Image (cartoon, rainbow, N blue to C red; front, side):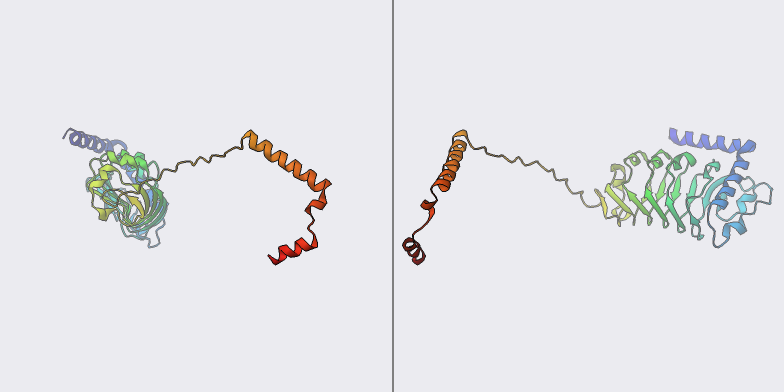
Length: 266
């Protein structure tokens, strides 16, 4: 309850600060987003007209929700299914009062920024699903302590789900279906249904199948038995004696024709 009160007071302070400089930052935020994405259908280019300068004009932009209809302060960006392409949009750190971002069902690719939590510290909802984002899930998302919903399904994300996600105690919605994730599911996220994790062949642990035990390889000690001194000396003497006899008395090793015939018959 105390945390909720602090969160509300913080947002009220952010809203009040917009009277001084917030509106200009939010306008710059949207300009940067428009310039950094590829917009094949010209939806943002045609709808986001910055020639207007009236209070609240950005609230009429496609996908933009404002804190107040007559104030240029972005509450959330809902840019789902607009055919947008390119890497993660730039300039979002200037939308300082934004608490919701939805980029789902587009064609964005590349990594999710490692400093995403620094850009948007106060998000309560983040939806990046149905794109082609790749690389690892940034562990910094765990710093978005007000996050209630995180949708990352159907991308190309790899690696493990960060263990730091155990700190996202406010999460009520979490989905990573259809990625390339591996490793153990963090304890806090094990309360979600298995249907929120399927499609990741390397992912294991509750609520999915148990993780396989790692086999411990034990080194094999091979013992080499040494010949004792007596057997070594005996072998050496036998070799020398055999060599001498063969060299000086070769006739001892020549069979007679009669004996050879006898051996052959046997």
